[in-house]
Length: 425
Image (cartoon, rainbow, N blue to C red; front, side, top):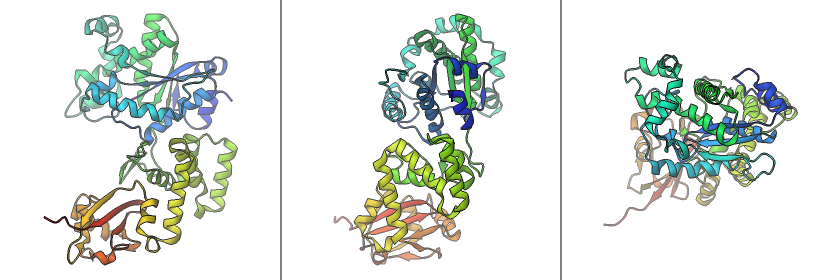
């Protein structure tokens, strides 16, 4: 199976330029995907394009991961309703280091056959003068075409509009494609479907300035079965950095995906082949209560991102919690099982705490009123006990070994609250 066919059966082709299927079948191609360094970690929304680069290398093509150290100083308006806060060079450099380590788990930068490359577009963009850029690049783009881009139109129609800085972003990305074409013979750019306009701009620049033929392939933007944006939860973004999202939380995210999404995500986010995925799908149909596709998904993606040891720890923690219940465990066992779960401390006080006060002060809810709504909706448990009364109080005797509360918010978000003795003045 060639690369295009691989991506196609996995559902990873949303659109592609004419001829790209044939080119990928008969030639070894160098292609790239850009990554935004707006944070020190990538998140699960980045996994789709990371997998695309990994599939590319597995089929003998040469992938390039472009870290937007230059474009990251500006920010892509695609999919954004307001301008991003501009980052400093130092912030970008810090973020680059974190992203580099995560990409290395998916790409082989030491391969002798089809080595992956990691480049920073700041290497060339920060050396461009404004006059040279406008003369050599800007003259090849009409304002009419730039205004026609959907991301630009949405921002122009918004209350805040769009700045010249963001308006020029697509030209910088087009220049990236040209630079990679010149340096590495790169003829393919991939990305999410919202990048189509930026990709075709780069192809056009290569044609105009070099007379070369380049290609584009975009993947679908993922939403869940409920229609929400993939990777966003009540607890926030699911990060690839274990310090931001613990391996246990990461594993649980995949384990709890909707039945309608599980098999699709196995195609998207794992290297399992069609036969293996069909087997998980059939097992899920025969025994839906055992969630076979979700378990396979959680294992495979957690192993890819965090390693086999993290899978064992996450599954061990889940078995410990759900088989025995927290009331049968010691504080130490619980903290080991839920390592990385958000933890806060509360001082021991006579008479204990109102539950709504405890949740708000621990940061588990944003306010007391949110805590009250959570209780009314039946979405709060403390130490395996459902909290049903808004005025309920907890005392130190309710804590496990008089020192630990295990709070479950909703179906899968866990928090720990440790009781500590007050500091003496």
